Length: 260
Image (cartoon, rainbow, N blue to C red; front, side):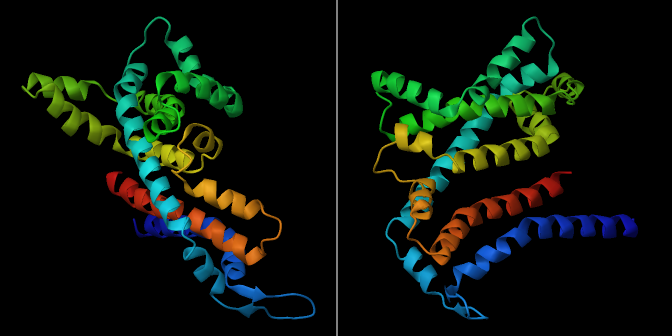
């Protein structure tokens, strides 16, 4: 047991190093004010951090992205749960075509889907508002979550629910105290993928969303793409963009380990 614990610790340490080491140059450049030939050592200062964080666009965009991505994650999981369960535990005629149709949003180039959605959403009154933006995200991530969760449910033992029902447990309590705990690790992993996907969306937010509702990619990406920005400005911008994702990964990995 002790050896297994040591091996697990080494694997986790190696995974953390592989994840964090590529960020080391970003961390260094985020604090560099001057480093050009023939200067051997860079000059460090936190001025770029102060400049970017005092920018009135960054913190509101960070808040908007968190709100949108968290809502997309929870709604995608909620809307896909029972459909994924049906796909995973039952064999029925037409199952494969249904699974193929769920893959269609991933196959078609997003730019074609987004501009097609723009026309439809204008007619439905869902254009240039938060409800429309949230719906547009769900169009992509509900099918995605359904496919991922259906793979989880393929290994789910339905007899657990049958035993609970024979003991007089209702449908709601069975779902909450039997089904959910059994597939919780899969739900956590699916939620992480939905969050990261929604967090990184750029084109969809700009085309469908309200121009006043700025998300972090909509602020950070143009800032990074401007040619006259220094390495330090771009490094700070990318760290601000990456840190929330790393925090979510750390939190969910802790929850995932506890559910195993």
